[in-house]
Image (cartoon, rainbow, N blue to C red):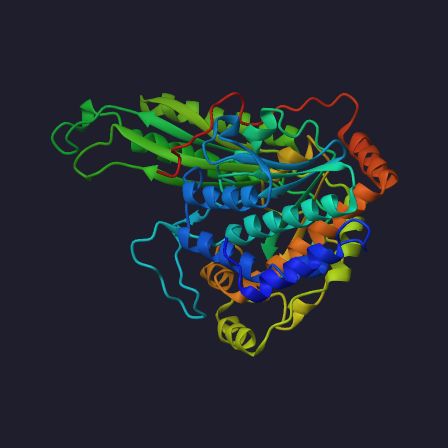
Amino acid sequence: MSKTPVVATVLSLLFLVSAPGHTEPDLIAFTDARFAAHSELAQRIWHFAELGYLEEKSSALLQTTLAEAGFELETGIAGIPTAFVASAGSGEPVIAFLAEYDALPGITQTASPVREEIPGQAGSHACGHNLLGTASVGAAIAVKHWLEQTGSKGTVRLYGTPAEEGGSGKVYMARAGLFDDVDAVLAWHPDDESRVQGNSSLANRSAKFRFHGVSAHAAAAPEKARSALDAVEAFNFMINLMREHVPQETRIHYVITAGGHAPNVVPDFAEVYYYVRHPDTRTLLQIWERVEAAATAAAMGTGTTMDREIIHGNHALLSNMTLAETMQKNLEKVGGVHYNAKEKAFAEAIYPTLDQPEYALGSEATIMPIKLENTSGSTDVGDVSWNAPTVELRAATWVPGTAAHTWQAVAAGGTSIGIKGVQVAAKTLALTARDLYADPELLARVQKEFDEKRGADFIYEPLLGDREPPLDFRK
């Protein structure tokens, strides 16, 4: 990737002063010098806006960036063409970063503080994964530099993880044992605030329920038909009644993805796509059994048949407070995001469009305390966290008050506001990795907490079973 003369000069000076026999590399200065490179990388992926398992250009760009920095690459891993692992260094400990780069379908937006869709585009980075992948790559490159210049022992890995949005890319990678030898995983996610996550998430399973009936003319011969759409509606009705009789932390959502083509033709095929979530995996599986029983009953009651395809499943995050507290100290050292005049004007223009924003403008410069309350979302990082000690950072890449999966998140993620959050994340990740390499006792405490929380008899079982990656689920 091309660098401006100024950036190249600064990088050369950093390598000079940090050569063997000189002072330890300054990871903050090293990352600051890569601002232009990070901006170019994030902007290109923002424009690609590729959906899950289809991120060919985004994945290739990240791979090229890492290869040029001297990483060794394994591609097409876990049966996923756009997944990869980049490694540098040798021996233990093994510290890993996670890079995501899939966009969300449906919503599009320019890098403007007013609503401005992009006609014909399939989706946009409404969850900021263009920024996520960039910062993780930036942190990995910085850590590789630190290992080389200090002569420290250890391996740094960057996992290229596709299809986080509903595709559970990391679950297939965890199922393949790719995290079994990792000592710690340092993750992050774009947000409207900067803080470390010390909490958990919701376990999640999803499936497409497909009903098959008999078609006939809806007016001339309805008695000969068996409506697949009736089955979907009966199924949904039973689930909506069930909502009163599940634990209150449960979340159930669905969308009818196929329901027929014309009112005068009884549909012989209909499909509904369900998500079910709960903080506890065992409780989730109990609720899921009831959901499947309702689908079976709906088919029986309407004279149709039913089959279902598990699309994805995620375990809840297993928190590690030893890692969280270490990362929090580094986040406070790095500090928050500070807008220039142009960025402040953008923020002031977009802020009135936000729905009841929780944070005021200016809070992007503040480092929040570690978050302990559980979130209502789900992530495939959860499965990684049951296979290796894991911690996740949030960095303010969006205007305060912005929610994920909104056009406002897309807009900010395409500007320098997003890149400033990338810098905060990359620095914090790199500093935390340095602490783990340099302090074996810290790493031992991380492992001890992980072993105690996971339990001696824990056996990892992915919630999506033995299915192959759904490489075409966004086509």
